[in-house]
Length: 81
Image (cartoon, rainbow, N blue to C red):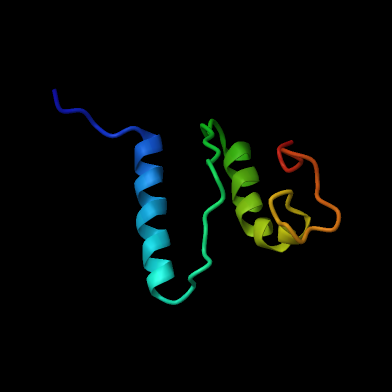
C-alpha cells in the first residue's frame, strides 16, 4: 500500500538535499543541528510567538547550547514561554 511520507521523512529529505547543495556550493563544513521541533499552532498568540522566535533566533547563536563557542549557553527550551 502506498502511503504519504511522515513529517519526519520530509524534514530528513529536506535537510539531506539542502546540506548536499550547500556543501557543493562551497560551505564544506555545513551541518544541520540534530532533530527538529514541531508544534501545532493553535491560535494567533502562538503564531506570533513563533514568528518572533524566528526573527530573534539568529542573534541568539552566541548563547545557543549547541554552539561550541558559546560562553554562557542558555538552558534548554528557554525560549518557550
